[in-house]
Length: 127
Image (cartoon, rainbow, N blue to C red; front, side, top):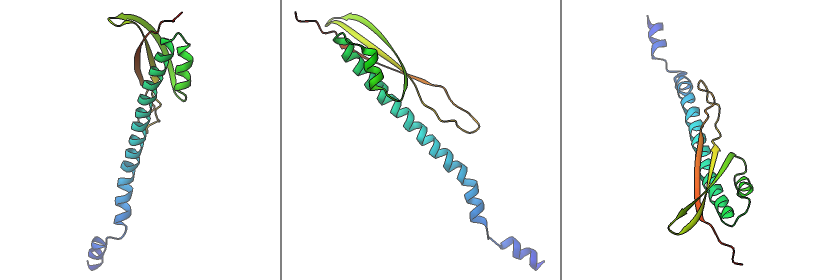
């Protein structure tokens, strides 16, 4: 009976068991933080690319090339629309970017897109 009580009160290895239980949660938290960083990066780059594309489209340049240069590393598509406001004619460039995702264990790869747009007044040629 003394031998059994000795093994019950023994706490050798308990820290290892606790570490093994918590370690997957630490890894998942780190993966979540990294994924949030990827989403934030995509938001910032897509908005900047839309703004750059709108600036180029306002002067009649190749807005698609400007968006591609500004959004290196992302899978983007662009569209251009024009409209008239009380200030005059303006151009709007819409950038749709695919958010890079990691393959999450037991879930897989998630497929999300983000859309950003920017408008600029169209500049007239001074001839």
